[in-house]
Length: 119
Picture 1 (cartoon, rainbow, N blue to C red):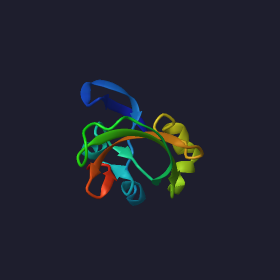
Picture 2 (spheres, rainbow, N blue to C red):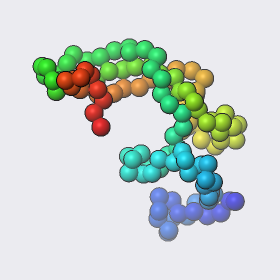
Picture 3 (cartoon, rainbow, N blue to C red):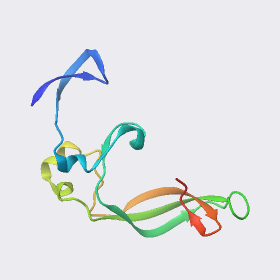
């Protein structure tokens, strides 16, 4: 349903927009704002490592040392709505193209059990 919505929460600055109500299925994939860092987002599927493509030299020695790695990954077990044409069109800038590998970066820390991504 199209109507006027507040731009960035500013009720004095109204723009054309739409309001949506999530279904129970949609709620399963919603990542709330604090966990999503900036704004709520949807997340579906899992990352499957394809290849480590680079790493910085370790900072520090032994347990506690850190590296920044670059890697490629595939999205597996993506929900059916990932392939819905209307969703893809509406969120074209936000959805990952699951038909090709994506690139990611992560900070890893050496623990007594090996390299691990810190929480």
